[in-house]
Image (cartoon, rainbow, N blue to C red; front, side):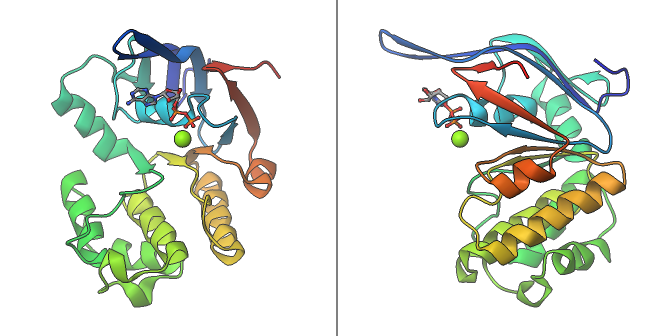
Length: 223
Ligand code: ADP
Ligand code: MG
């Protein structure tokens, strides 16, 4: 694993308990993400992709193993430290629920900038323009189409120009025009040294990735 890894996971384990049942969602997953690299994670439904993304982003704590962000340990640190690492370094795009429903698109971005302590303008406008939704800045999330919502979520995830972007099926339910916009944003970030980790079912996304990792039953397959 490279010393300059943006994001590093070492032997992640995650178990879920429901009564007598135990689900082993992650069984020893290690990976590292380098600057300028786009890594795709593929695998069947239920293989642990979302669990992995949540652990890597510090939204969930693994039961075993650890995650380092920009060389700093995030796992089993106080929530205040984890949220600071997240706000400063990680853009997160989940399958849904990325935007606060009671705030306009613009105010959602303003809040993200406030939390990260970054400058208000002109980055928000640029982030919205980069994904083609600048004209929807004053709209509420519920007023956007599925493709627009996905692109606005991506603008939110990237407005602070995070070193790391983790995305869970960002092109899952979007039209091909939106998918092209998302792909171009990944490329642009990678050209500027950003690191992208993306869960996807899309052949186009997998094809543009530098590496494709396959998750099956909570384990990464070789090769
Ligand atoms: P994927 O994103 O690849 O579809 P997930 O990470 O969502 O897979 O889920 C991996 C496994 O963990 C599945 O068997 C799922 O049912 C289980 N799981 C995920 N989240 C929870 C939870 N909060 N409680 C119990 N089981 C869960
Ligand atoms: Mg999932």
